[in-house]
Amino acid sequence: MLYIFAIQTGLRASEIESILTTDLRLEGDKPHVYCRADITKNKKEARQYFDASLAAGLSEITAKKSPGASVFAIQAGCDLAEMLRADLADARNLLLAEAKLDAVELTRRNESDFLLPKNHQGETLDFHGLRHTCGAWLALQRVHLKTIQNVMRHSVITLTMDTYGHRLPDQQSDAVASMSGQFNRNN
Image (cartoon, rainbow, N blue to C red):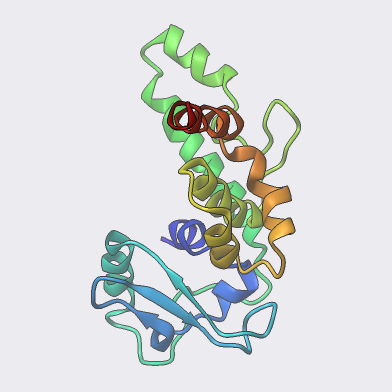
């Protein structure tokens, strides 16, 4: 639940650690977390929206918590990147165990970098990578860069463009192709 929350909201680890049950708005058609100014990096209040299935899951895990309790029980000094990597290792072991009776599939899965903390390009997953996933997935869905900037709470659009602009597939060819109607109208 923690990782899904991190991806859908784009919140930083320190912000997530500070989220209280009273910050969650789980009812209605626009569930979100209210981020108090004292917990955000830019010291501004924010609303970070998430989908209904996450709201239902959060409702279950917070139902027995007292108002004002932390949503996620993260121990002080916990290294979230290490926790994420340990969970990835467990998930990968399950993935490999599922294929133990199929030698070809087991080999394919062993050779893949899926669920490894470091991929074949040498990129290492850390908890902040979940925040990056939020922005990257929004860009891949062709969400407007200004909206991505707002979700990611970047202070300037150039940061958003430099970080996620390359994820917008076929933007140049689509843009040029869209002009063809203009030529037909003007002739």
